[in-house]
Image 1 (tube, rainbow, N blue to C red):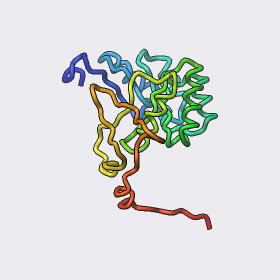
Image 2: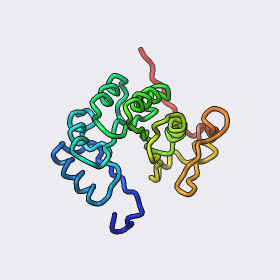
Image 3: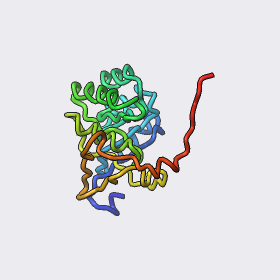
Image 4: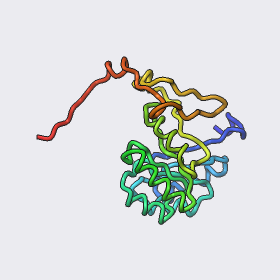
Length: 194
């Protein structure tokens, strides 16, 4: 990728929890050689000590936390500096208030926050508002370029990338409106406790 895109493009890599510390460190050094600027979730996310070991041995910033929802786990992640960049997911962690709490704990520890935002559903809108509200917002925003048909037409106005930036939606609430036509076509499921 570096050869194809040149040195002006900032490359980021997500390992999706797949390496042991030894292998993650080997891969991380290779990524450093190619100027990759972000190494996400190099080890299984529940193996915090493994990720912390990788973080200690690499110069490339290690990121993670998208799947963590327990605020006590977040305290542990931040206390042990398991990673360089935290990535809470507003929906996985249980809402904006809990995501703000994790981001503020990280800010006190001097750690940047680049929240996880997997697709162009409302999670991206929530994440944009979160990043606009925290002092330790990281240097980039996770804006999906993957085609997810189920999110198309979900809300208006659609988010637009201009010159590599996306503006936080303005207006009441989240700044977008859910499209009633999209909602009418959506499958509805109800869970009930017997």
